[in-house]
Image (cartoon, rainbow, N blue to C red; front, side):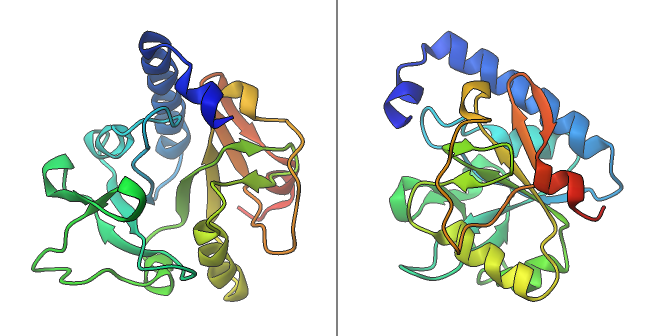
Length: 196
């Protein structure tokens, strides 16, 4: 899947990312919450590196993950624009600390600020099982929220051909309720059962 993503021509990638951004804005504009956790995409990743700016320009307060170290859940900082990021672990853009937030906040603290988390995935099946990059960072993070009874709404972003495929499930995998692709917004069967 990674190789397939990198083979997408730049013009097509831009078209898909713009469609994903339009669908995400439509989904998020339907709610009262103007604060969202999101991600800055890697090259070829659906949503693109500009996703945080797209959401911010649409009037959302955006929080991005900070990878604190191996085998730990994600921490979070507010996104203040591309100029206020640095390359973190794995080359992913992470927000820099600010006087207001001299260090990242925990996932538990984030849960009091956001109810929707927009996350990357390599693939998602119709039940909402998400295939990530293999590090387990998001799964560890979501297990904290689920264990506290505060899972929020998990929205995965993939290209349309990466949704509805068979994904192996393990006991620690978190399920997403909604999938946004370049073709639209799709609730998963987990999302059909999730409280709103």
